[in-house]
Image (cartoon, rainbow, N blue to C red; front, side, top):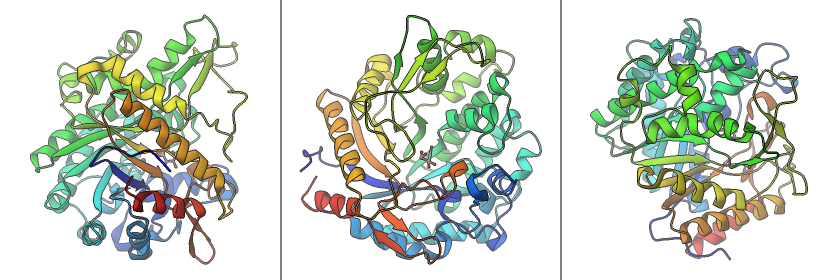
Length: 431
Ligand code: GCO
């Protein structure tokens, strides 16, 4: 059995709109960059798209039943911006908001805390056509959208997440081109970091104006390990972790990145970006081993494989103590400036099998790692499993299965895996 977590510790599951909803043409939803990208030949494995995904748009009551039966206290989902504003601007689409209205009511009926993320990468295509996150204007558009959503749901939703993993959206979407919108700008993608962060700060202000009581950002963080004496690991740490944590917590950019960003940072921007947060969301999957660049890449670092540990179906190394290291490291780096933390994603992809002892071991060891960090004095308030359901894993399509619940994508049948039963037992016995 797991150790006991502090009273009030919030267990939950996470999902994201484009990965589960489907119904991409329903109720006036506009196209997002992920519709465009996934329908472009060669961009996703086997040409998979999110057109149907888990059909959660129609099956959400059954999925909420699964959450309720599991016994978690909260559900982190994301709102599809193009359902709310089909072209990313202007008056909200009432029918699009109605879906989230129904979803929130159904969650509350089961006693589940709704924790919506405003932006989990499905930018309205019309905004991308005007430059997407390379354009400063998109920051203000995010704030307007946040205001519309909060106006509609804010009487029942108190806790919000602005952005999901801005580092991954910048890197995969704009630098490497492996995610939508598919740009390959490498270091020229850097303004995307600042514009997302500015959008975050403006959205925090819009949410607070609408009465939100708990606002956070979700950053993907990784403890960085150095393979050699070169500065590469510190540089990678700055790009991946500090570029997104320093400005929201301290109001500064790491030195060399501040220089590179100077052309797009206007006076006052950093004050907006560091609008105080109530919590910090952290997504953790694995540590990163970094060495000096070998010369083939324009980047000032090279990612190296971590040997000698188990790997997930995705090939990601399983290093639970990396999560403790990450959390205590954040505390040591930011001290008083660090708000309470929620682990807003952690999980693994496995073989499709329903008998998923691998996932049980993964979750068990990572929850122990969180507990170790709490024992060491880090204020961690919750833990969300990625994910409730097998879903559309971006460029990997449906090939990587992260669900506590198996989904048969032909019949849409949901089958709880052994890990679901395991977590249910743990929660029933009062973790
Ligand atoms: C992510 C994501 C999820 C992924 C998960 C597994 O934020 O990277 O929020 O969408 O599916 O991390 O790769």
